Length: 221
Image (cartoon, rainbow, N blue to C red; front, top):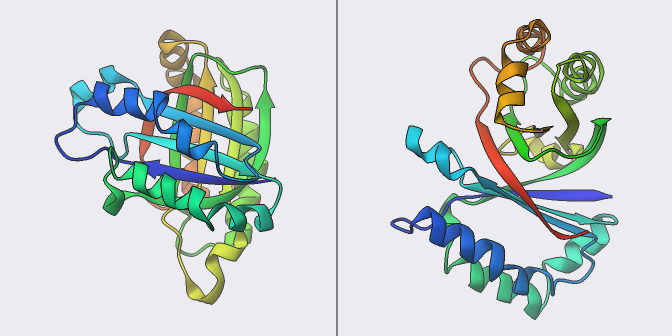
């Protein structure tokens, strides 16, 4: 299967609770009418996170399809036009973006209550192939050893996104599930976590990857 990962920002001046309520309770009415959806998940930034300032995105939506043909079919016809029209009611569409990804599940002990999302950009001197090889191999192995990580999913941007010299917004997103905030805090203080942070220099661009702490809502699937 392929997955579209869309990152969204709420309309200017819209309260966070109003944005999240509309997204969770009203917007699925439009999205679930798209043909070919196999799975649909929303991840909302934790309300408490806004005390530290505006996050890079207010959340992500993930939509799965069997392959690229059903994915193309979703963006055609009146159902997609209805989705776009509804997005304009609560999303700043000028700040929306997406990546089309392929998933690799590196660890799965069940989803926890807290979902952490990091957006990865590869080191400029690395090819897409070398970047993804390192991520799926040595780096994923380090993540699986971090105490408290219940699930780890690599959503790597598909190679087709780079054709013709194009550069997607992100080279992928790393998704990690924890049982609780305390579990996340304990993981962050571990030697295993320090080892995976050190490993980033081997394949990621310099700087801290954009990071979100979210609650996940499974709408379809």
